[in-house]
Image (cartoon, rainbow over the protein chains, first blue to last red):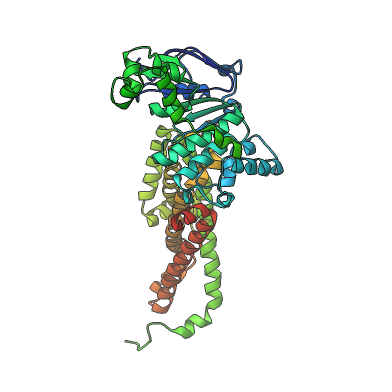
Amino acid sequence: MISLQHVSKQFGGSGDSAVNDLTFHVNEGKTVVLVGPSGCGKTTTMKMINRLVDPTSGTIEVAGKDIMQQDPVELRRGIGYVIQSIGLLPHRTIAQNISTVPKLIGWDDARIGQRVEELVGMLELDPDLLKRYPSELSGGQRQRVGVARALAVDPPVMLMDEPFGAVDPIVRERLQDQFIEVQRRLKKTIIFVTHDVDEALKMADRVAIMNKGGVLEQYASPRDILSDPANEFVRDFVGLDRGLKHLALKDDADVDDYLEALRPSRSEDDGS
Amino acid sequence: MTGEPLVRWDWVSQHLNLVGQRLIEHVELTLIAVGLGLLISFPLAVISYRNRQVYGAVATVTGILYTIPSLALFAIVGAYTGYLSTTTAEIGLVSYTLLILIRNIVAGLRGVPEDVRESARGMGFSNSQMLWRVELPLALPVIMAGVRLATVTTIGLVTVTAVLGLGGFGHFILDGLRTFFTTETLLGAVLSVVLAIAADALLLLLQRLLTPWSRRARAA
């Protein structure tokens, strides 16, 4: 669904790479989490997929089409986008914010209204919030509105840059769990950026661990990352060489238990 | 001492028609000046916002215009376009609005939060949609602050155009000074101040109506 071939990015005249010869493929319906220390180019990588940043070299394809051959504005309207600070439009009500992209591509009001209702249900938002302005919402509510807005035209691909980063740990965990539930039903192809290893292991079908200078150190399932880290950097970054993980993860069964504990229990599906 | 009172209310009540006429003149001169000022400032400010060099040039030119004393400006412009001329008055009045309006429009646009801009671009707003639907609405409080300042300044400067034979309430002030008739001078001065305060209040009200989100944010 999304494929990067030898993608590099250098900013300005410095010649230092933000992203260095990155190649990976994201299958349809899967979530890939880019994780790494700050300055590892994970956000730049994500922004190249909707052309907020253009690569210096290499090719990126979304749904089999080279993105450089597409109009950036059209491309972006077909890709859901959520950033850490969410960036809700402060002068628009919550309902108007959620309907931003449907409006841009010219849906009629009836269809927009119906869609907003669906999304409010899906993300368990209080319908009373729809008439409010973003400044009147809590951090957690804003984040869910941001996700609802990105899902509005039901785009097959979503880009999420630390979408749950700006809330406290308890709210974050709830939002993560809720999003995993939503994703189980919607099966979007997602690129998710975070600096939090546990969030990466929790959300991902595959984890891309990146290092400074935009180098990909390992691209593997969460299970493989924990049980078979590619190198010292990965071991160190995921915390396998210290603390609780070091003590707890002695064999594959431990790894499964650890990952199981991160994820929400499936029984919650029955209610929805 | 003539023993005459400071304000002769009977004179005021006899000249209410004249007050009405000059009010209209004062408001007209102000509206045209601020309206034309906005028409000129808006495109210049939008270009300045996108191009720092243009902004440098625009800020320098309008800054120089702003420093010319009003009486001198009217005298100089009048030499070319004639005295007793609305054109002369408006060239001067419009010149003084430009610096305030352009600065505020640019500052307003620059104040749009980067995350809002980024998320809007990421959702697929084109450049013009970004300007009209995101940047300008969010810049509106700062732009309106500029419009209020320009309006109040212009109302003050209109009184100076009395030297050109225009001037709205400025007429009263000038006539009163010429004839040593305090009533008329005070009338002109007080009415100018009242008009400025009223215009400012009206524009503030308009700004609140246009930006309901910022008021609710304060209440929340």
